[in-house]
Amino acid sequence: MIKTVDEVIEEFRLKGTSVADWARKNNVNVALVYQVLKGKQIPVRGESHKIAVLLGLKNGSINSQ
Image (cartoon, rainbow, N blue to C red):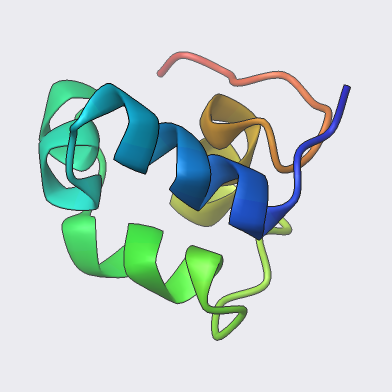
């Protein structure tokens, strides 16, 4: 099931974790996570795509390189 941005933010709140902590644990750029959550970066490919998939904002697969 695809989540909304509000649902993702609520999950962070309920788990007591920050976006920055989540980003570091998932080895992604903190600023880019915030951009994806704010809709300033469209997650079509690359790291923004990876972030959106990991957050559950979109369906897709992540290619390991």
